[in-house]
Length: 263
Ligand code: IPD
Ligand code: CA
Image 1: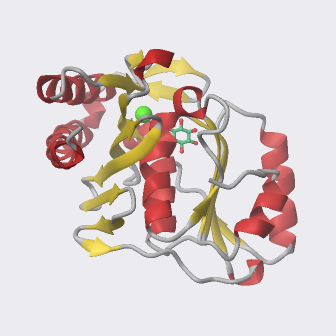
Image 2 (image 1 turned 60 degrees about the horizontal axis):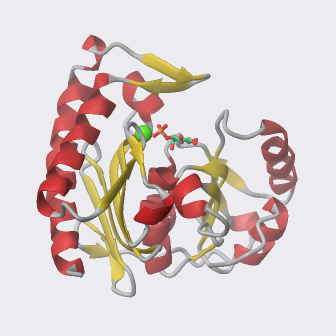
């Protein structure tokens, strides 16, 4: 299986998709915002960007399987060669004109995340990662922070209507009492990219879908961070909790959030 070809294709396709997404973003007042669930938005932009990514990937690698947020896919027989796609991660930010959203693509071989690309065309950031080969933003190598203790840490946290908010609020209260600062960017992949870049010291969200989690978790691992075992159980196809940290803070945060298994 040619992973180099898949990596180059993922970068090229994500760039084309990010250009299309940015065109929609600049004319977002024309979009009709539909609801998939409580506070869960979708627009023509999400659908058309995913359709473009799927078309291009299928043209190049017709034998590979596709799993995407808007069109689904990804059965239990599809894990040998699986593309995971979020056409727009952070749709709520996108429809409100906030800059934190991104086009996300990852590829998994035999259930192992091998490569990923995340592009935020508003901030002009292109993040890429290859397993065991590092992670970069706009061709600069990424490294996680070295922050050793909670009283110096700035943590990213996310929550959605997919999981109850009470544990989030309880743990946040305890961590605030330990002296943390925190940010709520509203886009999982951008939070994970910020951890990989050393801008945040960790990110936690109680339940994330594979297209929200896998591209950014590979960035964090390749930037030297420590993450929970997202693939545990049926994580690859059904999602899981995400804890991605700079390393020194992994143990204390894993205990705080009750996320036990490290990947
Ligand atoms: C969402 C965002 C959000 C997170 C949600 C995700 P979407 O992705 O990443 O920050 O809290 O859990 O579903 O729906 O905008 O692609
Ligand atoms: Ca999305």
